[in-house]
Length: 331
Ligand SMILES: [Zn+2]
Image 1 (cartoon, rainbow, N blue to C red):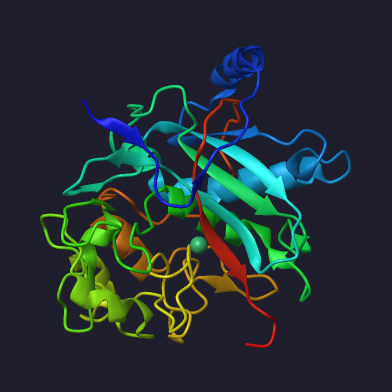
Image 2: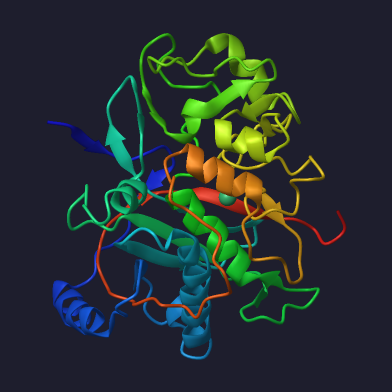
């Protein structure tokens, strides 16, 4: 049997009451739209604050639901209900939000996240009753929740799509030293299977061993680490896509994002930081290419901006996190 484990940066959360789970689950199933593809169930863990704030909570939940709907529209060929534990924080730090999803730990393999495997299997739940993913949101910063986002606010819906995509598998298990067990097979993400250095040489061998000679690439700056999947390369004019690998290693950001320092990528949803103001909430051809490469072969751009066809249940779980940082308004 496989051993269930969580990715780096994991942390656990308290568990909510099962009775609430049952009640909301029944309601959710009744309300689920017939044409729904992906549905999202958010379990809010912090009573009275953040998403449950007596004044702002309802609008924040609506914004998260709408962000999930915007992203889910690309996945309309898949059917799964994705469960997330959602916490909130209020900390004066550059991190805006973070999210993740665990995976099985099988050394020598490239693993789908639990969220990813649930989508790609059309609903088969690899981790049982635990939440498939986690999100933490930092409400220290002023958020623009709707479709008007001022120059002093951060676009909530763009960030929501970004965070959810980490849980979908747009994330790396590579750390500052590559792995933690040099020369030995370790567990990597599907995303890691496509990462190379500037010359196109894999960072992790097909057998799951990180090539320690590639450690300098992890802090090599723009172009030092590339995503070299066929679909992404095709969408990028035949070249590998620059992955974020700043000279100062950034835990939770390095190798799990598009490169902010590449102009053509800096405004895309999966760049590692975002400046204030209203942003596009659409995935680029490059991002769609990466998602195809990591397994979402049926993904497609929605014909029109959808009405969020999502249902919100309440469940329980724990998991691993990747951050999105705030960029000062002056780039
Ligand atoms: Zn991120």
